Image 1 (cartoon, rainbow, N blue to C red):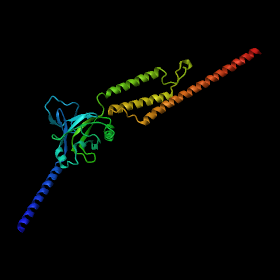
Image 2 (image 1 turned 180 degrees about the vertical axis):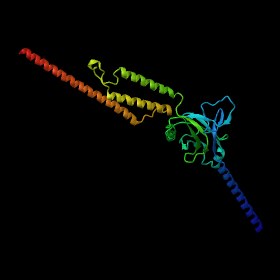
Image 3 (image 1 turned 120 degrees about the vertical axis):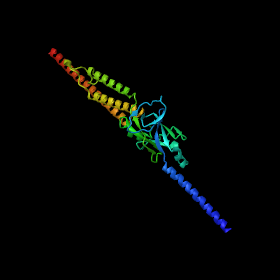
Image 4 (image 1 turned 135 degrees about the horizontal axis):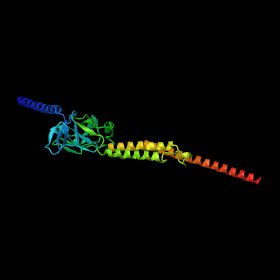
Length: 300
């Protein structure tokens, strides 16, 4: 009897050891095979994004999909699909805490908080993202958009409070869309028209009548200052609009600056009007005195 009990205990211990070994092996397997960003998918195939490769603006969708080391171009409001190796195994390891819909994009190691995938294909290890600038992802985008020129960026994904997955995949971040040159042309034309008007008219000059002798009136500091800040703010606003697509980005400080410029002009206008009124009153008084003096002379 005692021999049977010992045999059963030994068998139970062997089963427990085998179960522990299998769990340990599974954990080691997951640890040795972590998720890795394999590349970026589009109609032309899988692009591994070698940083030494030249970027391609438009993929050739007429050919059979293949794997290459090309670097694609993408920017704000574009959609991008990533191929993630071992994504399913990573999710199965701790299904209660890991959710593919909580994975955010990392650009050069900086998370785009709140930029979650719009589509998850667990069977094919694919994650699709829409690159958008929101109040939560603003800090991550500013670091990239502040470079003001297209440049290659390392892309990965991961949980917001964890390290991103390993990735050697790069893409060309497009700062300005192709239609941004239209805004530049409009701004240049507006400046040319304004300078032409400033030269041929009195739009920037002091108010009042033209001085004698064919001379032009002097330039108004208040008007010139208001025009200068108007075009500076307009150019900055158009730059932000073409870069981010956001329309309500005018800070309160900029609006205050425009108000100060307008207030300076209005104050100068009031002061000039007061001076002209005083001068006219003085001339009227002098004319009245002269008329009175003339009348007295005739009386005498």
